[in-house]
Length: 390
Image 1 (tube, rainbow, N blue to C red):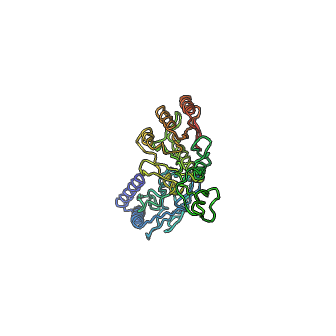
Image 2 (cartoon, rainbow, N blue to C red):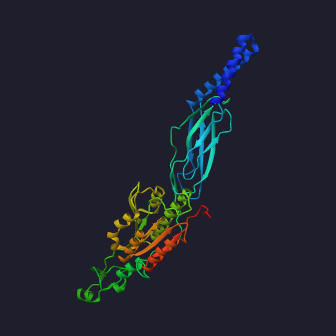
Image 3 (tube, one colour):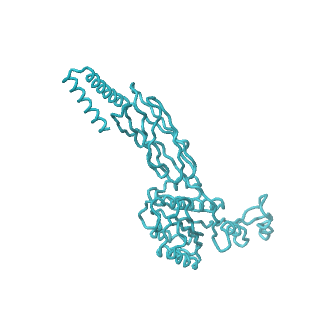
């Protein structure tokens, strides 16, 4: 733009000087046309830039990872003079790379365009127009502006997959343990009169004969052992040979693994909790429902600076009341391995989901064998997406 204005300024000065020096009307006409075009361009940009309005609307505020999102972008201005098509510079997010959309209808005051993109990664983001450029039809002047609004928030939710149900004891499920405890005739908590529908095996015959009415045993429902899911929210560990472009795929795999374990426990009607640390600390419990968890996982930023080893140690004191522990991490060190083995020795069943591209790392293989020998169930999760480096 500066080069164009410089060239046109030199041309204007040359023809004006020639017209005044030689008295040539043709040179004066050319200089006048250059000046009028320049003034027209400046006025059209100034009038339009004060009234340009950019609006965005998403096809949905919540989508599952992998779905296609449609964004309707409307651009309007109230300038009286025509301008060049407005250039929209799109905001870069984990799902939308930075780019420019050039509107094609020259001079039209109201235009709408549909921008479609795939929600490839879990997260909370504000896709939309970062800024826009208003230019005149001759290309003399360009002005860049930022829209008044940042757009609508888009939540890309993790998609759970099938996982094996957790076990709370060797070969036994928590629900079965509770059912048997409620049917033990030797541990009633109270007695009451018989009501229609009570099973006959709960009748206390001796007490019924003594009181001359049917008395049944009443049992106190024991607390069902819960499951603890621990998600490593520190920046994912990238194996050697894998660049930063692989990090979103690791994060997706970790979030969807956490959602899958919790969803499986909810289907099994088992209690489960998942403490989240970071920008939005909270402790999720299964009674909140799966949709709340999916929303919170989508907002997880993986920027926690506290070491995951310390997070594991903070949960140690409550493990004797826990039936099963699930650990999801992309960082497997000797310190993490030792803490996982200590957890197993405290009583609960422990399952590790190790998220990595390299499943044949010799150093990590030694740690997993050591944990398996201690009774820890080890599962590898390979992220979907991204081509491994040779």
